[in-house]
Image (cartoon, rainbow, N blue to C red):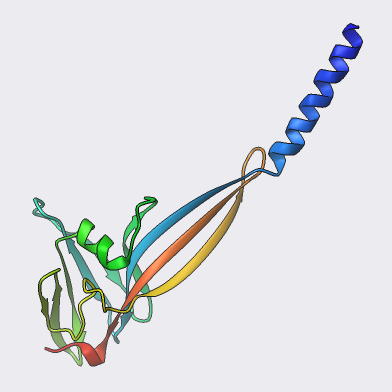
Length: 157
């Protein structure tokens, strides 16, 4: 009888191990980014209410720089997420060796043709899926990167 119980327990453990091996955890992440389509690096300053110091990133030419990332399930659109996460964005750089300063906020825009806060603005979506092994099974991480283009033709100095 004891031998039979051990066999049942052993078979149960093997079956559970096999079942857990095929389990997959899924995580979804979102990010906001600016694509630098200028000839020089740009500086992106993200301002918050109640904060003196902005968060700053540098973005090289022909690259994009993520300035906000979240794994929140409450994601709606890039425009709505921007309004929730920052009061304004200031981008500085050079256009034909002349300094420029772009300012975006929910209510205003300076020195650029479109505002990423508005519902009519265009955001590109890049999706990256990474599969990572875990002890029993695997983890799939999906990154949704929402990218707003900064183009020389739209910048006024």
